[in-house]
Image (cartoon, rainbow, N blue to C red):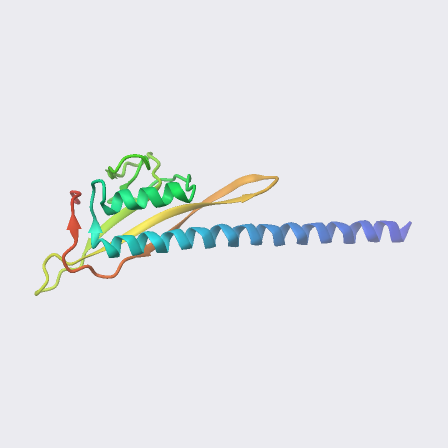
Length: 159
């Protein structure tokens, strides 16, 4: 009888450690995917030297990249950021407190005496922490900054 109770307790410990390992693995895979997407978006903004709208603009390129990678996660942006409500349009809207966006962008001025238009962009995307049986637990964000862009393209009005 004592051995049966002992092996049940050990089996429960093994199951708990397996669940912890699977949760850690799921979190790592989701974070890696989000980090890769964030790096690509930062590269696109740097390549096109800012955010431009239009058929061949950087916003259209970002939206197409996210659609191609089946990115469907939405969350709220912080105050002062611009967000994309839809990946089908090339419109970035000023963030509101309860609205959900696919990604968020913020332009920060890094002007110097010689370069008055210099700016840096911060982009934020989101990823879910979900387990196979339990489902979605949390939504996290991944932020990335571009290098300083001396003369950024600015088709969008920023405040």
